[in-house]
Amino acid sequence: MSAVPTVMVVYGTRPEAIKVAPVISALAESTAVHVTAVVTGQHRAMLDQVNELFGIVPDVDLDVIRERQTLPELTGRVMAGVTDAIEQLRPQAVVVQGDTTTSFVAGLAAFYQQVPVVHVEAGLRTGNRYDPFPEEVNRCLTTQLTSLHLAPTPTSRANLLREGVDPATIAVTGNTVIDALLDVVAREVPLEDPTVELTDCALPADDSGYGADAPVVEVYE
Image (cartoon, rainbow, N blue to C red):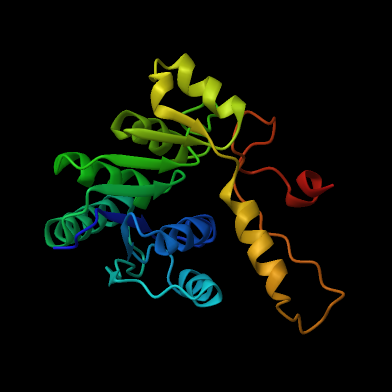
C-alpha cells in the first residue's frame, strides 16, 4: 500500500478527459497523494486521442464500450468495473467530472464502498431533468453522493447552496477546461491547416435558453 493517500480519477468520455487532464497532472506532481487514472472507455477513439495529447497513460482501462449498447447496459458495466477497481486499488478518494454516465455511476460505486467522492464541475443545472438527458439527472444525483464539490462558477455554487449543500464542502475553482487549453496552447501543437478553427461543442451547462437540439450555427454566432 502506498505511504500516501491514493486518489482515483475516473473518466470515460472526451469532455471528461480534457477537463480532468489538468487535475491528473497536478495530482501527479504532488508529493501528498498518489494518483491513479481509471478510464471506462465510454468514448473510445476520442478518449484515447485526448489521453495521448496530454501524455496520460491510464492505470486501468475498463473498455466498456459495446456496439449498440443501451444506457442500462453501459451503467451496469461501469458499475461492475469501477467497483472492481476500487476494491483492488483502495483509494482514499474518487474524483469524477461533469455529468456523464461514467461520472454518476463511478460516484455511486465509490459511495457503495464508502469512499469520499470529489466532483469536478459541480453545480451545473438546467432545471429540466430531461434536457439534457440523462446528464441533468446524472449531475443532480452525483451531488448527493459527493463529499467535496468543486464548482466552476459562483452560479454553480449558488445552485448547490439552493439545494441544501453544506457551504463548507463547496469550493469555486474555475473551469479546468481553461487549464487544459492553456496547456495545449503553451505546447504550440501544430495544425495541418492553420486557417481551420476548431470548436468543441457540448450540451448547455445551465438554463441558457438553448436546448440540446439547438442549431449549432445559431449557438456559435
